Structures are given as structure tokens and as C-alpha cells.
Length: 195
Image 1: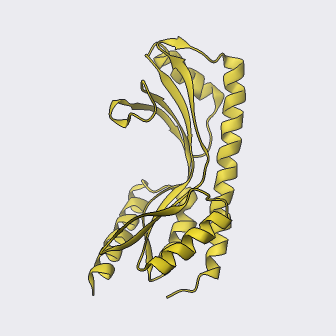
Image 2: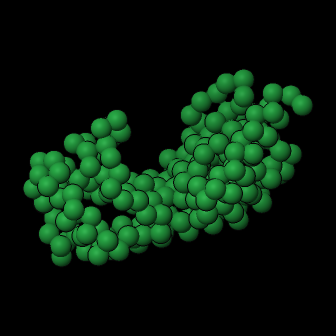
């Protein structure tokens, strides 16, 4: 077994453990399994997209953020309002939509480029090769949906319940649409020849 196969086996084993412990995001499981059928590719991380509520002065400052709620299948306004009631006096609270994302290591650049082109044709327009090492080429498959919406700024609620309901409906619809892309890509993967 060469280094590629050893590392691939390690990541596939980790995925198996994550499935057993309930940590794995099941909405993206079929796509990840399909990618991992190819001997010259393997996934290292994935998320089917989610909506999160965080407390942070700025949503991109991960080191000072705390997650108040996280939903992979949409959020109910009632649950969101309860969280805001509990944490609404915080300095700043953000409601964030994150798109699906998958990191795939490809054995060669040609395969990585073909995967990226296929992903883009299925609506994952922000897909690209993000790194290269002796382990291979890392393709990041990602779509353009991302919204960072301030709900509380400097301790003051800036979106009332009625408008927040509209925002939640919009985010839930965007999340559902992004998950449809996952299925499109899974089906399109048949066009890549398996090595």
C-alpha cells in the first residue's frame, strides 16, 4: 500500500466512525459515498449546508464566536425566537446561511479539474482546487449561497419578529435549494470514469 492508499483508508475509516457516532451529516452521505467509490478520490470533510445562529462581534471571527443554534434541515421561527429571548442582550447575534461544502483529495490534477468542472456545472460555482501536496490535489466543492445577517447589534435587536419570519422563510428555501444541488452532483458523478 502506498502513502495515497494509506491516507485514503484513514479518511474512509474516520467517515465510518463518524457515521457510527451520529456525527456525520446524513444529507450529504450519498454524495460522499459516490465520490469515495472512485479509487483516485476521497473526501476529507463535508457539510450539506446549514443555518446557524452565533454570538459574535463579526461573523468571520471564529475565535470569539459561540454557536447558539445550528440547523441542517431548516429552522423554525419559534425555536429562533426562544434563543433570541435567552441571548438577545448579547452584544451581537448573527443568523448565517452556509452552503454545502465538500473537500475531495484527487490523485492527479486532471481528475481534480474534471471534478471542479462537473461541480460547477451542477451549481457549485465557488468550486476550486485549494491546495496541492504529495498527498494530491484538494478540490473544494462549494456553492455561492452564504448570508450573514445581523439580528442583534451592540445589544439592540435590529430585526423585528415579522421581518425575522420572512428572513427565516427565505433562508429555509435557500437551504432546500442548495441541497438539491447535492443530488444533482451525485447523479452527474456517473459521467466521471472510475479509476
